[in-house]
Length: 407
Image 1 (spheres, rainbow, N blue to C red):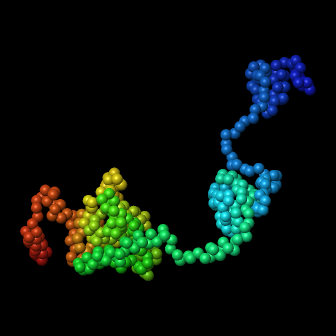
Image 2 (cartoon, rainbow, N blue to C red; image 1 turned 30 degrees about the horizontal axis):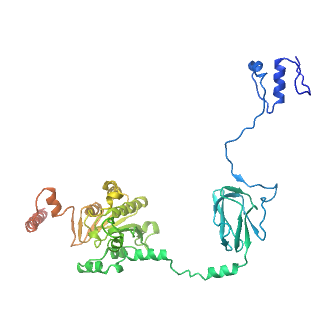
Image 3 (spheres, rainbow, N blue to C red; image 1 turned 60 degrees about the horizontal axis):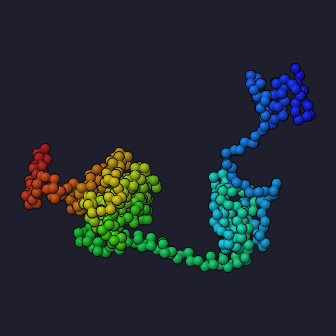
């Protein structure tokens, strides 16, 4: 049967299929109904529904077609226009602020790059149109500025600023670094002179090319704040007893990459060059640099090994086993040259680093060992007597010399 439609609001009496077809043509948009279900769907009213999208889109301010943003300009102000299309990610000034020419007022992001919207003249910010998260188009008015005409005065004030003046916060940093230098510790330097030795900083300065050494962790102090004042720690435990950093050695002979070396020097004038909590952390980090760069390591190892007095360690670390220096130094074997240098006493952990190096250099007056008489006695072998043990050691050396001569 041929289906007809009429201009009336209701269809003529037709078969169910025609009625379904008429309802489908009347509804917007059209809906597909299976043939097997036409008799059921024929009596249902089909009405179009508006579907709300859950996808959020950037907010766009109202715009006239082809024109700028629709905003009333405050009297006596000039618009500050967006230089390009982008999203507002930063507001650097608030309404009522006095701004100078060239001052950043807003930051736009476009194509993962940030663009600064700056004031074109000095004045007072009267209105901010675009807010954080808004998307603006090129030429849109994002703010309104009331010019004040005092741009020359602001520029003159800016030129009057003394660029050589040191800010208080910078002065504090400079003073902290000064406390770590030998000039601030004359008593410690005098003790080294009495033993005929140089300070750790003198060794480092003599090793690396002038001006090339960049120190790491210079302002660290011993982890003993629970029993000592911070001023005491800064004055008497500078750098927590070890100097670490990166510099160039023989830079006049090699390029920058090949001349780069990692340097470490235990400072015997600071708690006998022992290995403290932050001391170990600095060592861990600087050896990671050496492994990453495959850079040679030069290490002055004078010191007494592990330090028992760092009472803050329990609050800073769950276990002393998190020290990675020993394993990292072992992995450097065959990766980069490891050179250790010693003058004076070198025991326990310091001696381990000395002995694991590829090249070991020690002065005649070095005393190197993993443990002293007190540690040996505490371990159970018994008490050592200096006179008897010295005689035994002399006899063993003579016996070794005779065997070497016979061979």
